[in-house]
Length: 142
Image 1 (cartoon, one colour):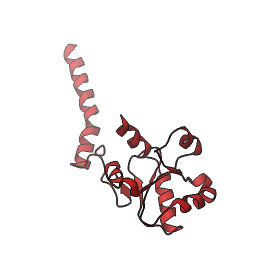
Image 2 (cartoon, rainbow, N blue to C red; image 1 turned 90 degrees about the horizontal axis):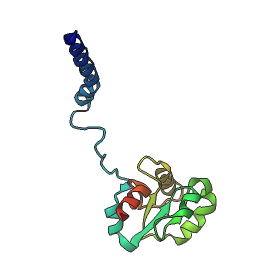
Image 3 (tube, helix red, strand yellow; image 1 turned 60 degrees about the vertical axis):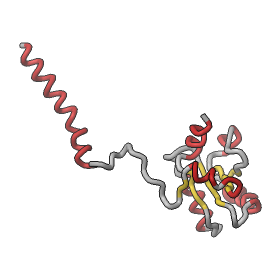
Image 4 (tube, rainbow, N blue to C red; image 1 turned 45 degrees about the vertical axis):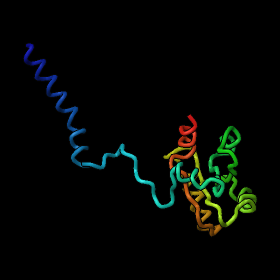
């Protein structure tokens, strides 16, 4: 009887390990939980902060989140109010500025959408997305 229970336990353990082994074989050295490299339209927080006064921060989050708290000096520009907010943003923009757009987190796509529209529709260059967004900024403050 005891041998049967041990055999069943070992079988369950082996079955539980199969997905992990499969994932290790499939992904090899590029594990999905490892940080992905910064893409050409993204900038990490250290680089953005190194630009110092030549950065124009744009917050692509909803109005309520912006009103609650935002990066000091940031200007609100989200897709919900794009037509209304674009004019004032462009009035504050200067060609020598690095425009860094952020939203809530790494998985938030709003910053990429706003940055793309700034490049495509407003024909701005030096437009980047802050990798990790507001969450990265908050974590750095701690």
